[in-house]
Image (cartoon, rainbow, N blue to C red; front, side, top):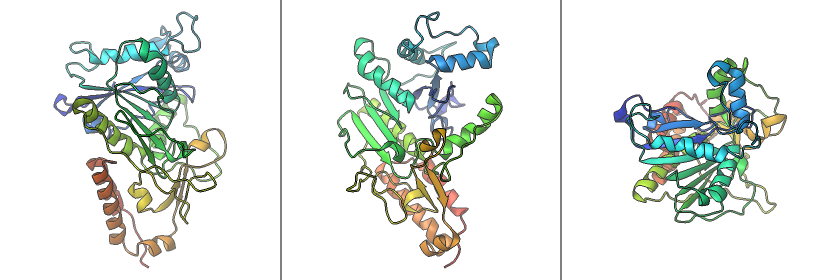
Length: 351
């Protein structure tokens, strides 16, 4: 459970993330300090699946040894995970001593999941929720599947470039939005940088990967997810629907359309794509998870000089792009400011 340090900083939105267990242990795949608690939201990570809980029991028997999500071994295929997730999330409505949020009141409770967890949540939304009481006010499905059923609660579907494989899409509706982010990866640099020290602490060392191309796109998908949370909060509280966004474009051969430098065309285009200093894509190959990491190949000095010529021109290009994305609602002001500060640290060789 993570929440703003000061109660006055809490805006009423709580993100309840179904922890991802694809790697064999719990990952808070959607956690981002600046974009969640820094934006006045609270976050709860819910471990609902057997593999994650078993890892916790092994890692710290004293703390977690008596946890069981299998009904004493009767349900070993995560049949109970949907009820576990929903029941734990329902406690976030409580207030007072011992409540996860203390005295804070959740005005917008968002169910969120990424990748494998989005798949579990899709089953929950489509098959389980119609038979049970409503728990969540809205949903965020990231880098994975999303429900086919249309309920009454709003659903935001955010996909990286890695995840968009077909021009066939569900259209936006009064309760559904889908955004696709050019240049971003299913599992990019931001999450890897955050988790590396934690994995080194908990597992002895952070994993390393031998990918065909330099991995980990630096396009900040988490900036777009943060904007989606903010939109969801308003959508839930006063019915203000988010804007639609252009989809990624496809070439006649069925692959993603790319410009002459190899960057995807269409979609939500952040300043890291519109004013690039590197080739960032959602594509890669190699061992294990490399296919999810995307690519990051910095431009050489000659290319940077040809593109921008001076530091000031580069910074201006970043500011123009971020201004467009702010106006479109694709990023939040704090992230635009962070991009501007980062741009000031980039040295552009003179042409």
